[in-house]
View 1 (tube, rainbow, N blue to C red):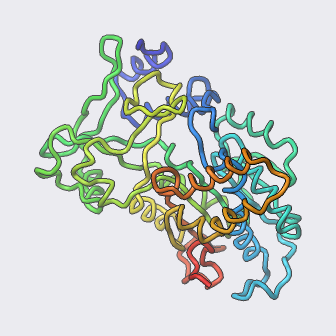
View 2: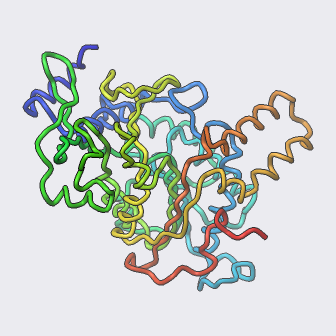
View 3: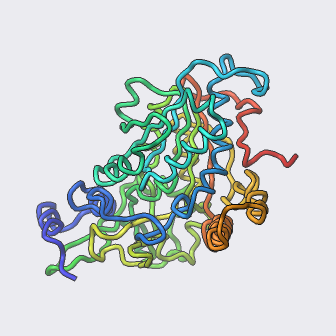
Length: 401
């Protein structure tokens, strides 16, 4: 496939090659040519890929209980461990979604909060952080009738007047540009995207700087040794800490929920995983070729849980807990919701079967059930915090009644 003219011009201007992270950022987020930046990708059952919110409103209906608990804790002034005995304060609260896709989750959560927690919803605004104009345009159309006040902003703008609220990062961090490194058998080299005779190629670049190579030690990647033969390739996630720092600066007090594909370092960087986790998606099809038709495919890589937690800690966030999505949604009432389908009137059989199928996909380990949920908190100072109050424990991690 010929190289797009815009990409060829950029590579030529850069001397014929760029680090993979720069290529990935162009291919996804360039405002004119990127898959997200230009608004080309479509999310949903009939789009390029499906997400939990695109399967129906049940995902948001379950998640709403966790969001409501956190918002209520943040609204109480002064906060106590017994949230049931206090009235919601007058503080303005914010539900912030980053990378909101088509706007489905934001709209569904807004409706669920208004329906289930009207007093809480009355003091809550919806804030969407979307860097890509093409996606923001579709979100505005989707949320024209949103029952909560809604606005679009950036972390940088929010940092001028930090908010009190809850941040949702649902399938967002996997779209941050990753660095790719390749083993030479004796050391690590940065992977480059090169232009060679009118075609794109992945090639090893120069050796990593000693300081960069030293950061591989906690991941089990230093030195490569015999278990990392020449050509063995994987990803690093340098964008996590800047993103988490920017997100934290936008909050004076709040919670962050990350929902994404993620693996522990020992699994992510296992010797048998010789080509990392990077994948491309378009039209419900998956490809292992990240260079195909740049700007028209979604590019995504799993998160490394160890890297995420370390970056969060360095950015002033405190880990509250983590689990798999199947476990989280079952704790939030998925089984009861599934059982309740057989008692619902006014719905056709086809609609009920479709909801049942969607609910099962949410917890199926072979589908969406293996997503990881990681919850973080930060206090007013944005610095190191004391241990969280017992009420801060996520519902999805609470002990069974």
